[in-house]
Image 1 (cartoon, rainbow, N blue to C red):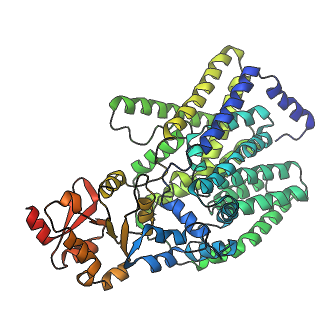
Image 2: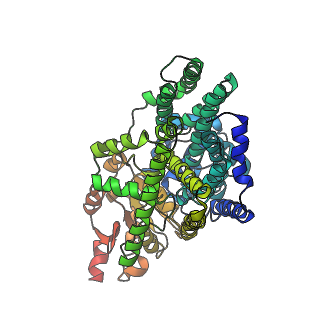
Image 3: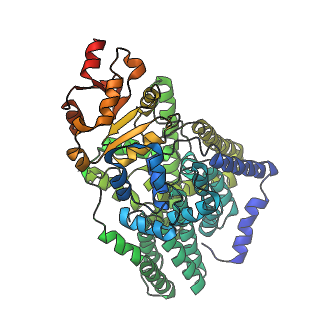
Length: 556
């Protein structure tokens, strides 16, 4: 963060002196990265988390939906569309209110922007995801600006852009209708604004920092860890002396607190938090973190157990990447002043030990070490590696060719990884049970299938939006624990008529009733119904068939 014009002009020569072939490579990589972000947007499964995005931009809540549809009445897939996307009469205010009621743990900025976006471009899956893809493009100038503020080098910024462009992790989340790409952009912008405010200590720059940090908090609550790290960094580099920079920082941060306070009130009033469950093991967390850091540069999926050779190769590659990341941080720390490496560490790492500790003790429904929650860490991993590659390329000319080959190999692994995941219907970032393809295949064999379930809305949405599912003749009978307790299957004539129609020996043609992911309570209640038989589908644990006893006896 040397602030002389002479130094910055000298640093800019790094780019001017690069060979044209290397410049061309960087531009091509950027173009490839943009392509991957917009390719096949509609083909990938629109999973439960993304369906919640459509719910909230409609201005409705999950409580409203479940109270209307999870009643035991037979409904169509189309009935869910009333609570998805653009709903006549609802606007941005309704979106904010829906989030405040349903889950204020998800701040509203992303969802408000998406609501405005779909008002112009429509609420198709491709259109909603396109917003995240467009936002992800702002990562490139943002990470360039941050690298410039940190290292006074345009080349570090370009290398970071190349790594980010084809980063498998970044590309996957750039194609999701969730706030993570916007969160990454706001993290980078708030960091760059802070460094600029320190370098040029003027009210305008501190005001920009306050706006960027507020936007980050209104995008994702975990931005608080970035803010805490920066709050530790400023007093350290200022040696705890109450000077103008430290005073301006506290004033700007006070503005951030005041701007975020209205949403903070919604959070502390919210009572419906996820229940705690048992903690994760150390081995589980280590595997997750190794997988996370590896996917910064290479990602061919999450299951290599089918091939020993593939497992060995991926283990070797993962080890190389982990060593590279560790060495890049070591080099950053021991070859730079604390103003540089202290900012990188304090802006990225506070979230990691707290997430690991939380997951070791107890977890909610998801681990806090989930990749989507660790964007600050990933961003600074890429910056650290970009700086190391820059030093290699600017260093000893004897090894110059070797380092270029390594850089090209790193970029190539990212491109190949993105190409592999591009046609996939789902990937590790969408943790859907592996039985869904078999479930969909089985359901599609029958016409007028009725799905009876008391599983949560998230799982139902995963089924409805799963690729290749034919919803034309599909119906649902859904329950909450309360509606299931009051429901009497013996009196439901619609289901009885279906079972009577199926009372033949040809079960493969006429079977129409399924239990999907049923609780033990639902299974027991259906079995206790007069003349009903329930059996699990072979090799598909989440799906059960419902037949009449007379039909079962005829088959026997």
